Length: 217
Image 1: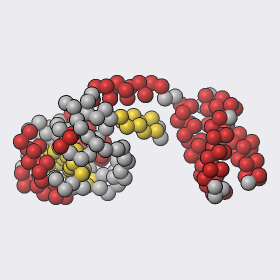
Image 2: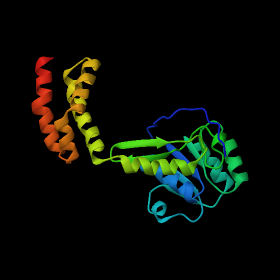
Image 3: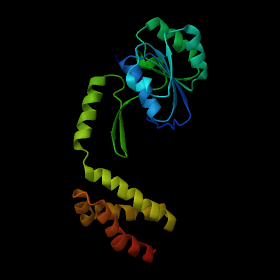
Image 4: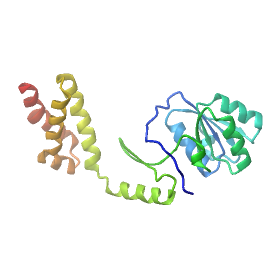
């Protein structure tokens, strides 16, 4: 399926948002859990729910009652359509015309895409092929997962630590950027992070870089 979807990647804070998922098959289950784990309030309508959903506190409705679907769409901020019944999907899509809508069957008929993603500690990377190849999105995800090392993850944590200190001490964004690049390219820090020595790297930054930077500001 060649999807023409004009848009751009965004991250949406989901805490407290209401998400309705139609369908409890593989795709519906995966998306319900994804939104639920992002702190959304999730309601799912379907049949044969997995244990992870049954053991959660999301609202579960067994069976495809049209009144329940209508009320659920009205309640929701985001609607995810993932049932195997095309007529029911179309019916729900019409009801959700003013909502953020994700359609697993025909993504181009919605206005919200749920991309494949890579999660490694604090790092998240989303992958979207324009609907042209979910298989390749999965393969690209595996490739990314295989090349991200512990050092990259620790460098993210170290940059965050340094940014927090610099933002409190320096008003110039340009200066902060320059100093962060110095820290990033320091060979000693790279060796520490290669060895997983995060606390040693922090101590080195404090004593040998940040102190001198802030003294000279």
